Image (cartoon, rainbow over the protein chains, first blue to last red):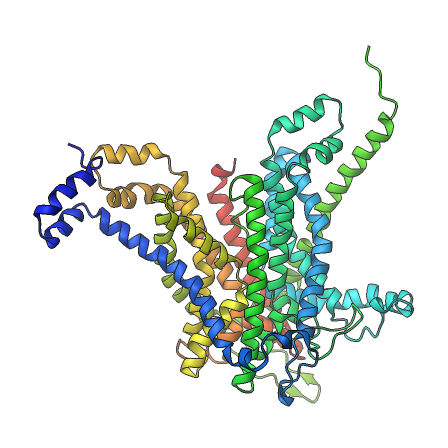
Length: 336
Length: 289
């Protein structure tokens, strides 16, 4: 007789007559219940971890929340030594550098996804995907270092200086001084390289999920390949691509070290020029929390972390929801 | 008889142009990859000497004629990184694999859905946030930067990766295997540990290796927890060195000899990541076809 299939009825009948201890022995005879509880315990631990992260950041920032509320997010002038906490430059730097990254990596990543999924010869597809995804595997400190030693000097002499001397005279967005070359635009470009694989990989996965009769129907009425992609494939997967862009944005918002190394660490004012220095929320935390002056300084930085956590969480959850709804499955969940 | 549409030429050229653009975009994305890898190799390969792997930090000596070239090695960073990531693996492996088993073997319940949601939240959290949590929980309480605080932070970062790969790999094991084992009377825990896991072992190892590679290169949380140390240290209760931290710190110094060390440390990290990714790709090549 197979106990697997009538376990419930069997146990209920026994439980009435057996003591609690005997019932437990009966239930755990094969070890299955123990195994289930064990795996369940570790699974619940993962849930607990998420709540612990939220709880710790919430409690850690209570002093700053009681002191300023969230108003300090909209004030300029960060100077912990003088007791001034205005996180607006950090918020501005985060939004601007991530925005630039998304603006650059978005169209490029979608094009790459289209190429990998629709046009690439079969033999090249997997090696090219691997190379693009390798960009995501390189540690962020190496991006930062390459930025400091190679990209920033190049960008300064070839792009930033000429532009600031010509266009920058009339457009404040590109005004000088370029100084050391570190600034918002450079950080945005480095972040763009870092989020490119995310956008490309998810676009590719979403396009792969488009059913083939979409393509066949379009080709059958005489469309070229590009017309097929533009009219039948991209509209079908629009939601998923938007989700991919948002996942990329989430990654850019939380990126710490590469941004810290190339953005120039100007913490107290907002530079009107993209060539000027700035700071992002994540890099502000990384540079000041280990040597914070006092508990208020610490607490304020943790409050910045709380805000950052909230924003990236919202962006990521909406992105995943959109992707999931469009592809009917967790596409691209391996990359985040 | 087939006649061409009147606007066919324009459409054909638009098609070619856009196709060319997608090829161009792909090549454009490969440029930074080649440049970064190329530069790291070019600048780092010269510094890979015996001393680099066997010596610790030495203060740069500024003589009258300039700076002395030899600036020691990164032995302290290698030891520190292995200790920190090793301890993190010890903590992350049981949690990640057991939770992955739960998701794959008991999939259809609301707890599993919520656990999946939570792993997504964890993998979405910026690494600096996890660093802040470890800082508040451990560094603030013990008034001491320490190696194991860094391990805790890395554990939290590795868990979602291990959970998701374990789940996905276990789901690839055909159900007939489970049924065959059940038909022989094996209880679920027995068939999971002796049939399912061995079948999926290579895949699980793959996920663990990728998590390892990611943890080795993670810098931001270490900045808040481990702090760094200039001496060879095995004490996880005190500040300890780590390879990515050294790369960061030696980048920001004015001494060329330390910058060279940073490049070589970056090369070691890059080679590690490259090697692990290639190994994983080689191990999973049959599944990718």
